[in-house]
Length: 95
Length: 439
Ligand SMILES: Cc1cc2nc3c(=O)[nH]c(=O)nc-3n(C[C@H](O)[C@H](O)[C@H](O)COP(=O)(O)OP(=O)(O)OC[C@H]3O[C@@H](n4cnc5c(N)ncnc54)[C@H](O)[C@@H]3O)c2cc1C
Ligand code: SF4
Ligand code: SF4
Image 1 (cartoon, helix red, strand yellow):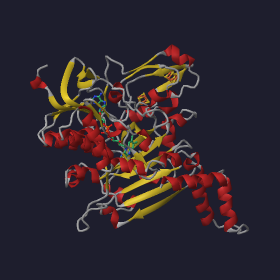
Image 2 (cartoon, chains in turn cyan, purple):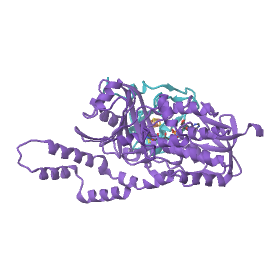
Image 3 (cartoon, rainbow over the protein chains, first blue to last red):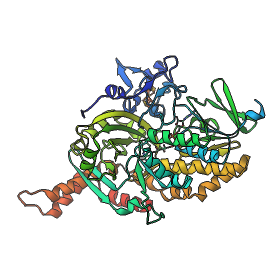
């Protein structure tokens, strides 16, 4: 059914091979704590950045590997952004 | 590593640029290895939804038809549409013309569609199978981590523990091109110069798609949408595939970062807009994705897309045109990948190879196309384009169709539309001038 759908449900339709051993995006929570604007919260197509009690909550599983968060990150909070290791990550069936 | 184990070429990235390059090299008997981080070709490739056919046919005449016959393409575009949305209303212009089935310069006696709607993963998987048939050694599941340099020359690549060597490395690794950046070739990607695209692919029976878009069994529609980005520079697109609809929206990340609404939420509102929902009603969403795309045209293009031993092709080198109604990245990727292969096939080496590549980029008119569209980003930067003008257009139609007490003349009401949009006369003159310069 076509309805307003949240990103969690939408991501559930996709095929992912999550790399459980190595995170391809790593945040420095201390840097994020100093970041007032937190643009990562709005730009991520997968809605993976959320805020809880003023702290950034992030899980790299579900990442669409677009790279937008890396480009808007203001405070150096993203200390690592790489593509997942070979074979891992999103596997678009349609693209 | 011994000389026997050295390849003629290593291509990084099995997108349209890398595939075209590897294909054109292998066809001439070159030993080419194509490294792709996805576990199979196509998994990481993402697009909005249409491919202009000329580039594939320039790589090899008839290739596009073959792709279509083998189900790698979706529908021939027979209808070009432009839609403007304001909060609750919308208007659509539909343009259909037999000429869309006869690409400029093609034999008028046969049908050669100018463009096809496409699902990138499916198309790329097909293209990769063609490349393998031609002799390309495709190695999926391999992420290149760095380039190997000897002195000033790039001689190979590293992936995990493995090292591979070749006479030339082609970086066709797409918009974020970490490889080109690692070679010191400045990447053009930043929050201003790209757009972030979000797309849902929605499944519907073929006949329903044909009825809703008023296309016939073999036809297809490509629609651009203005006014669907909550005022953020960007726009939407709808493509009719065989039995799915691609619904996409692209936003400028720098502007998006300056406001509070989450992009996925704005996208969902677009999807449920009263003028959009009826098109997809009853469908089932089958995939959801996001990807960056270059938005600055010629300004993003690397002027020196090479170093000794390295060529950069496709979106990694900045090749995308977006005029608001036309987005071209796939065809340009194929053209530049082909140009890279042709340059390599001349046997030129070192800096001369790079110069030969640039000469080929000029020869195939790719850079001409980029330069012809070079002022579009100025026009597209007008904030009015993304809400005030679509609002105004829709409001004018509302005035045109409204029957009321008749006290105000139509002229007064249309002037009212302009006033309500908030766009000043001087702004409009300025935008018209920018549009004129962009043409
Ligand atoms: C939302 C959106 C809508 C678009 N709409 C259109 C459209 O309608 N028409 C059109 O023509 N174009 C469109 N484009 C642009 C077009 O899709 C791209 O420009 C085109 O796909 C670029 O091709 P490419 O081969 O250069 O790069 P890509 O297709 O991105 O391929 C790069 C490949 O390199 C691989 N790779 C990257 N790094 C590594 C590494 N380190 N090691 C190994 N492999 C690596 C990736 O996995 C990927 O397969 C759109 C883009 C977006 C995002
Ligand atoms: S790369 Fe894209 S999808 Fe992944 S976390 Fe960053 S913004 Fe979200
Ligand atoms: S923008 Fe960067 S620094 Fe700021 S909260 Fe997000 S990840 Fe942290």
